[in-house]
Amino acid sequence: MMLSRIAESLYWMARHLERVDNTARVLDINVVHMLEADENATEEMQWQPLLAIVNAEADYAQLYPDGRVTVQRVIHLLTQERTNPGCLYNSLKLARENARVVRDRISNAMWETLNQFWLETDKHLATTLPPWRAAEFYAFVHREVATFFGLSQSTMMRGQAYGFTALGSLLERADMTARILDVRYHLLLPNSTRVGSPLDYYQWGALLKSLSCFETYRRQYQGGIRPLEVVEFVVLDPNYPRSLTYCVDGMARALERVGYMPDNTAQAQLQALRTHLAAVSAEQILKQGLHEFLDEFLLQLATFGDALRADYFEAHLGETS
View (cartoon, rainbow, N blue to C red):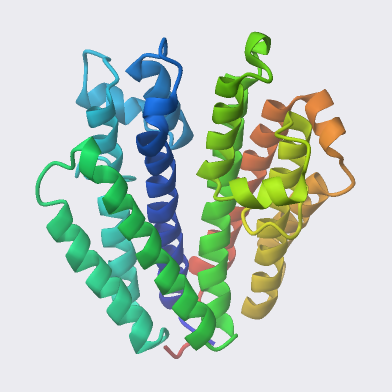
């Protein structure tokens, strides 16, 4: 058994690091592809959705009272603005701090990789990150996060420590997948005049690339990009590592490794999430409303996170570290 503070640090180490990668992912796609966007699209039209995806609209309004949305401002806020607790810089700092607490529970290779990642990032972000240098930096972030989680797969014993690490990573990934799909789908769906156009293909492609599944999707679905199949793939496919179903199934396996507590509320909440995703088709999801379906999913996911904290992190899991 382990102390609740150790369990919580493992969970937040992985969750913050997953957030680092997700933040870099949505920024990277916008930076790389902003030149391909509709020539009539303003900077605000291109970059406002990112603020909604990461729930940073209030932070942006506080930092920039004039309300003008620009690429440089969004990159700064989401990457390195120290007053934004959810920015990439602060998330990585918290991941490292939590990893330091659990150094005896993770491998030396994991710690050394994360520590070096932090030192390099701190140096990279010592000055303002301009858009022309951002794509290179985000590619670096993707590699480092992938290296860390790859090492966790190959060096961690499959016990409680691994279970809490997986819970943090998968919960954060499910949250971001749902937010990306909700916001980008909402922006794409109303404009029926562009269906089938090069811009329409670009926009749907950007959604899939934000979730690192553009090539995988095209291999699985041969008829182009269709909303119904995007929803089927991103929400329901059990084999796609960023789908909601895959993440929830993975959290169930991780919770089994952790071990259930008496009167386990988290287990019940996770079962509610699995029920929400089970026995529903993509057609039914779109018929009832994708936004409503994802809203309910995010609410239940947050409830599960709260139950996890109450059951495991606010309770004593054992007397030895």
